[in-house]
Each structure stands twice: as C-alpha cells, then as structure tokens.
Amino acid sequence: MTQRATLPMTIALLITTLGFATLIFVQEANSPPLIYGAYYAGTMVALYLGVRLWLPHSDVLLLPMVTLLTGVGLIMIYRLTYEVPGVENLATTQAGWILVGAGALVAVVIFLRDYQKLFAYKYLLALAAVGFVASTFTPLGYEVNGARLWLQIGSVTFQPSEFARIALIIFFAGYLAEKRDLWAATSKSFMGIQLPALKYFGPVALVWAASLGLLIFEKDLGSSLLFFAVPVLMLYAATGRIAYVILGALLFAIGSFATYLAFSHVQLRVSTWLDPWSDPDDSGFQIAQSIFNIADGGITGTGLGAGFSQTIPEVETDFVFSTIASELGLLGSTAFLLVFLVFVYRGIKISLLAGDDASKLLAFGLTAMFAMQTLIIVGGVTKAIPLTGITLPFVSYGGSSVLGNFVLTGLLLVVSEKAGKRSDAEEARYEAPEKAAV
Amino acid sequence: MDLQVPLLAAKALLLLLLFAFIYAVVRRGIGDLHSIPEDETFVAGREPETDGRSNHPERGSGSRSDTFVAAESQNGHATLVVEDSDILAPNTRFPVESGTTSIGRSGASNIVLKSDDYVSGQHARLTRHGGLLYVEDAGSTNGTFVNDRKTVGATPLRSGDRVRVGSTTFRYSE
Image 1 (cartoon, each protein chain N blue to C red):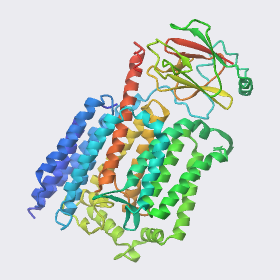
Image 2 (image 1 turned 45 degrees about the vertical axis):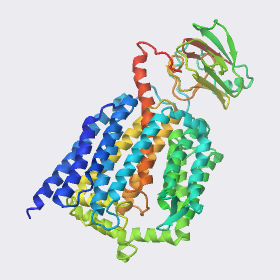
Image 3 (image 1 turned 90 degrees about the vertical axis):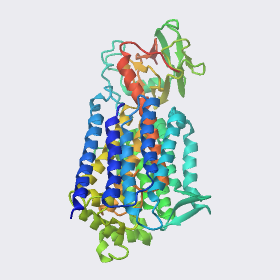
Image 4 (image 1 turned 180 degrees about the horizontal axis):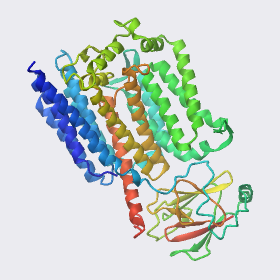
C-alpha cells in the first residue's frame, strides 16, 4: 500500500494555515491562541510519522485526507463561531477533540495491531453495541432537538451510537465471514436474480426491525438509516446476492412509509424537504437558508468569512457542508467531496487487498459507513434527500463523531498493514518462501 | 474595495491548494490500481471454478457429477493421504471427520505438522458444507494450495485433489 504521503500531508497543513491566515488577516477575526494551531499541526504530523514507523506496510495516505478534512472543519467552525458570544471557543474545543481522537487512533494501532482477535469477541461486541444504544434510555441519557441519543456521565456528554456502529460492524464482519456460504446458497432464481432460501432473510428482517425500533424510540433518522444500510451492504459484499439489497430497499421503503404515516416529526422532515418554501421562516428555515448559502457561493465561493452561513441553525455540526459550498464555491466543495471519494476508494482498496474474509468485510463495512454518512448528510443539506441529522465525518463539530471516525481510521490502518504485508510477501514468495511467523 | 484583493487572492490560492491536494493524493492512490491480486476471488455459492483442475490427471475425465460426489461423501470415508512431505512419512492417512478439521503447526490442531517452519500455528481449516468438503486458509503466512493454486476463501475439494500446506502435500480421497 502507499507508504509515502509527505507532499499531500504538507499541502493539507498549508490549506489549514492559509484558511486561518485569511480569517485572521483579511477578515480581522480575533486570533485563537496560536498554541492550538501548533498542537493540531504537531499532532497530525506526529500521527503521520508514527504510523509510517509502526505500520510500515499500511496505507498512510488516509492520514493526509484526515488532516485536510479536520483542518477545513476547524477553519469552518472557527469562522462560524469566533464572533458568536457563548461559543467562541468551539474551534479550540474541536482541536482538543482531534487531539483525543489522535490518541484513540494511536491506541487502536498499538492495542489492536492484531485486530483479528476482535472477531473472537464478536458476540460480546454486538452486545456492547446494543448496550450502548440502549444506554440512552437510562436516566443518564437525554434528548437534544427531539432525538434521544446523548449520554451524560459526569460533565462528559457523548453519543454512544457513534461507537455502537463500529462495534456492530466488527460483529457483522466476523459473523458474515463465518456464515457467508450459508447466506450465499441459492435454490431458485426469479427474473435472473438468484434467490436464497426464505429463512436466510431472517437476519435482514431482524436488523430492519432493530433500526426501525431505533427510529421510533430515538427519533434519530440518520442513525437508523446507517444501522440498516451498512449491514445490508456488508451482506451483499459477503455473498454477492443482489436479492438482499433489493429486499433491504423494499423493507426500508415500507418502514419509511409506515413511520411517515405514524410520526409527525417524520412528516415534518418530508414536508420541509419537498417544499421548504411553504414555511420558510419556521420549519423550512434551516434548509432554505442552506440552499441560499450554497447558491450564494457560486462557482468559486464568496471567500472565507464573506458568506452569511451563520444564519443556518446547527451550522457547525450538520450544515457545515453548506458553509463550505458557500465560501469555497462549487469548485471548493467539489474538491472536498473528491477527498471523501478518495478516502472511500482507499477503504475499498484495503478491503480488496486484505487476506481473509473477516478483514475484507471489516474494511468494507467501515468504508461503507463512512460513505453512507457523507452521502446522507450532504444529500440532506443540498435538499437532494430528506434531511437527517448526522455529522459530516471529521468536518462537523462534535467530540463523539471525531473520536469515532479516528477509531474507524485506526482500524482501516491496521487492516491495511496486514493487507500490505501480505501483498508484499506475495511478490517475494516465488523467489524464497518466508518462514511462518506464528 | 481594496480589502477584496487579498480575499480574492486567498480564495484563489485556497482552491488551487485544494486541487493540488487532490492531485497529489490521487496520483499516489491510483498508481497502485493495477496491483490488485491476480488470484480470482472465490464467490461463495457460485459453481467452483474448474480451470486449473481439469488438467489434473488423477481426477477422472469429468464424468463424476456433483451429485455423485455429494452422495459418496455421505458415506464419510474421507481421508487426507500424505503424498510428499519433509516431515511426515508418505502414505500417512488422516481421516477427515465431520465438523471442522484444523491443520497447523500448533499441537492443538487436528492434523499437526510439527517442525515445519513454513507452516503457521493455525494454517488451514477443512469444513463440511452440504456434502462438499471445503478447505480454507486460516490466515497463514505462506498460504494453502489446492492443485498448486493458492486458495482464496473457502475452496471445495474433490476426490483426487492435492492440498499443499508448507512442505506437505496431501491427496484428498473420499
């Protein structure tokens, strides 16, 4: 895999520096304590060098992308909040979270270097995931904007579902790798599609019911969509049976329609999606402002600090992409989406190169989650699909999200280390077989 | 208006840098596209690929149908016979029981290949599924070979196939 990425790394840090310099010198924003910038740059460079040293075969190209995404995220959060009383320190808090996330990535690299042992605990991890999600219903959990997905322990608040997702992906990777021959077995076909026996659709229905339950009780549309779509995609990757995806889409359509009929908050989301202009000052305000901002950006954007995206409620979390589209324009936001695309491409590549089924599925599942999350929130803020409140990975403000995505990157790195080692060994195999390490 | 010039310059520079970043990342990232492993991935459930086996003399001339193999294995006299090995005597027989049979250097394996440096602790697994015996590499360092082709995923075995683990070659017979 790619072992050198110093040039992209340098450019990513340059972009972050240039962004802050623009805000400070051109827009005359109050400078945040520069020590935070030094912390941030130091952390990312140390992370890059550390990963190259510890995981010499891994796909280190992921790190410049993480640097760019978090860097632009910091610029945007700072730009949106430096003059807003009460939240002036949001960017420095986010820098702190990035530091914590980098620590978590290092911990993953050190302790989960042999990540395959995780698969031995897959049922425990699944249980932990369910426990994480259920924990929000205990007195420790509380609601924000109608969605009950926050947990408070002492003074620390976090979203357990961010971590539940990763645990669940590890579980599905281990489970599907073990059982995939069963799921793939087919007896009949319908219109050229191979149909597995009816009983194998049971787990799909189970995951569907669980995500529907999440939707009903937590009122969190984005999370429940992720909890459903990622396992179905992994099942497809494991078996190559399109029937699971078709059935999954059907079940999803039925579930969405039923919840649409049953819940007013879902109806509200759909009506503001279809027609935000019927109530542009209240329910449609957020999405209408988002579209105004994106349109205001034009081709090259208004320039940093010159837009008006502070008007969007929740702009630094869910709507951070609108700010990017507004201030960097079509060109900048396209480049930004391309970074996400390349990240996903590297993830799929790691999955292709990985040696065993469980690792392949793990890398694919993590990548699919990353991709789905980006798709859902970017589609939401551009009014392509109904808006659901989830974060843009690495960019949005939010500790749990940043931490979760760093852990995800750490797992991709350790999988790529093994995959890289294997493909290097493959090339050397014909000359001299190496001695088995175990 | 004079404030607009630095902003414009900063904006242009930022966009330029963003695309430079994309270029740098893509150039590094796409370069290894063609290094995807050549061995074809086993797609579970699909008909096992037969090339690489057909030129194998020991295995009848394709007259043996799948159902026949399946029916035969129900009798359960499947064995692995050592054909060539640095560590085991030729013609040593290992019966393959139902359930999972493990092959490896560790003493906990069902088939122990002690003191072969090219065998991993847990090297390969044999599993029975629907009348067919599948061999699957258990993440070994040097891989498991069926008829001299490296296995990817679970590979079904037919009578007469040769399975190589480290320096040992087994012949599978039902």
